[in-house]
Image (tube, rainbow, N blue to C red; front, side, top):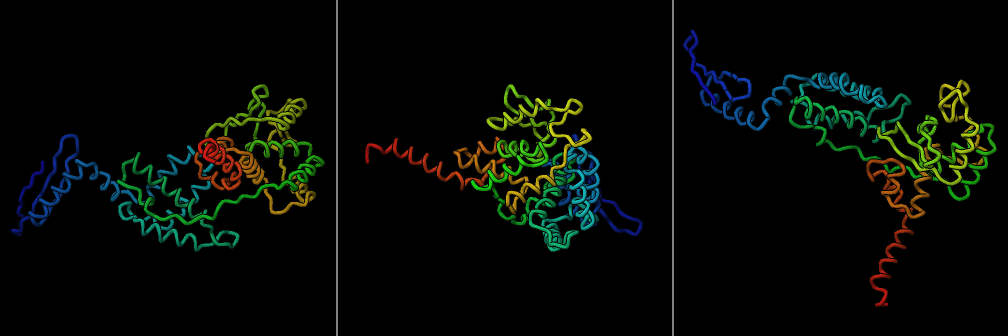
Length: 355
């Protein structure tokens, strides 16, 4: 219910004090010079309270973007240890640009202007920031807004949702050719680093990331079930990775020669941290005559081989540990031959007697 009370000041002027009282909500009060304005405010405020909009709007006026970022960094980022340092830098960039604005004044247009400024800026190396960088900065800000909307009730909507993301280039698909693969494996086998060959075969056959392989401990390896359990992955979920064939044989041999003073499969000389493969990996590439190839491309190679051998996008996503199929779409063209066989088989069964 709304209550409007007319009051007269000492100089004879009238003003109208309005109160909106709804059960279960704090009293809202405002003062106006005209009664029509008081009535309009009362109607709008009462409707906003009933629809759950009023207090979010009030909080959005009270808190600045800097307040939101500071609280997010304090409360939420500690739960994201892998990305904490990077995202804190991204959020502080937004804070420096528009942190002084109240949340209700931060619009999609304002965020869009900042996005353009970000992409026109240069990195420490003197190069322009990539569209992918712009997407990451927007994603960090967007999640902060989402938490402010859903958990803190500071505003009613996330303005970043209405901002167009920079268009990222198609994902890189560099995989070893039929000639490159034996050349690289031969160079790895001849390396002075006795673990290089086993590590590369594991990467090629399982699609595991470099960090996932190098931080493996023996408790994560189940030779009986022929699998590896990845406790820490990029998307934060545990993943069961099947190990088969030559990779399994190499892992069994590696287990026989395991070092008992470290839990790591591939420890450094101090047996406390994972070994550094950079030098031996670089030498192997040079010896094999392979250019424009990174260790992460072994993961692309594994996915490409799966696609060319009939694996579906769902199969590849399961093996690589992707939550969505978007990242796997880059390999779909490699499975065209398999897809053609499936379509041909279906047509044969349906229309075979018509031929």
